[in-house]
Image 1 (cartoon, rainbow, N blue to C red):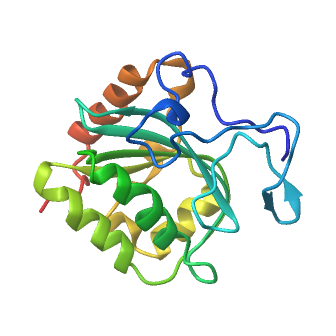
Image 2 (image 1 turned 180 degrees about the vertical axis):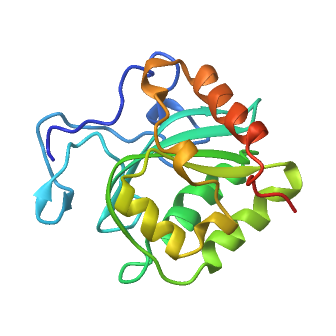
Image 3 (image 1 turned 135 degrees about the vertical axis):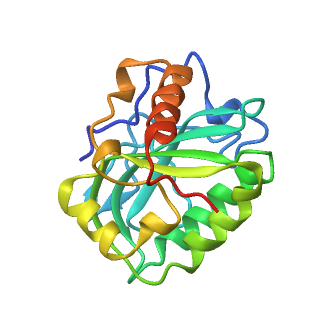
Length: 194
């Protein structure tokens, strides 16, 4: 796992360590010192810690004018034991919501497992952004991860499903990645609407 880096080809568009509005502003990264682990395996030092001991993230792109963020995740998303969604919401998403972000794309290509609990933090996150026309979309989950998310009823607060499980966002620029997600949402009758 130590050689799985966060997607780096968008660094010329955005770098969270230089973004004064980012919760990761000023973070200095090492290429050689490995400190964070998932399952006792070190992960690449470019991943950001937000309080969880099993799930790590990277804000790949944040656009404050168009109000969206693309975030890549790695590790085990464990709400049951570690309440990872609480950390993700309180220590990461809330900081972005305070800056006007209300569209969230969570790229979960490297999320190995999901263990759900209650939905209170997902509901709160949804409540915080829905009045702005916001949404949370989870991309590219492994089949068993998607199954667990659906069993935990995340689809009531997040856009998940097969139509979001094979999105080739890495071959696009951030605006095109957003456009792909918005196209799926606009043609998807299951989109969350209240």
